[in-house]
Structure formats: structure tokens, C-alpha cells
Amino acid sequence: MDLARKIGIAIVMLVPTFVGSGALWAMFHSFIPVIVWVVLMALVARKIIIGKLRPEFKAQGFELG
Image 1: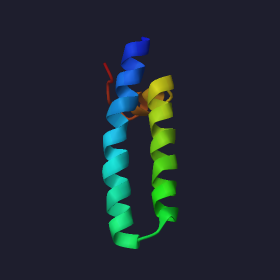
Image 2: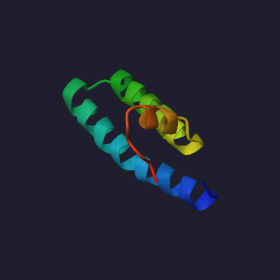
Image 3: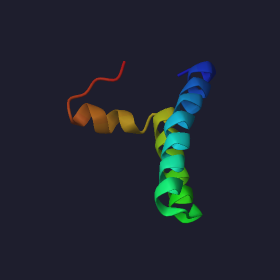
């Protein structure tokens, strides 16, 4: 995967991170669930970028590109 695609994936992953963070803040008014959400999204984005999710999806019958 080339650098431009990795950067694009990271930018696209910012959208659910911001939306989820705002929703969690509105529900709990605490930074703890927001921080947990941001860390989870960072881990998911990292796995997508380095390609670790590909074997898990192939095992379930999904094809990624």
C-alpha cells in the first residue's frame, strides 16, 4: 500500500473518531470514554494501515481489494 493511501485512510478514520467522541461527550460529560474511543479508533486505523485486518476478513469470506 502506498503512502498516499495510508494517509488517506488515516484522514478518513478521523471522521468516526470525531463523531464518536462528540457523542460520547454528550452522553457522559467525561473525557474518560472519549479517550478510550480515540485509543480504540487509533488501534483500528493502525491495523487497517499496516494490513493486519486483511487475514481476519479473508477468514470470514470478505475480500478487501
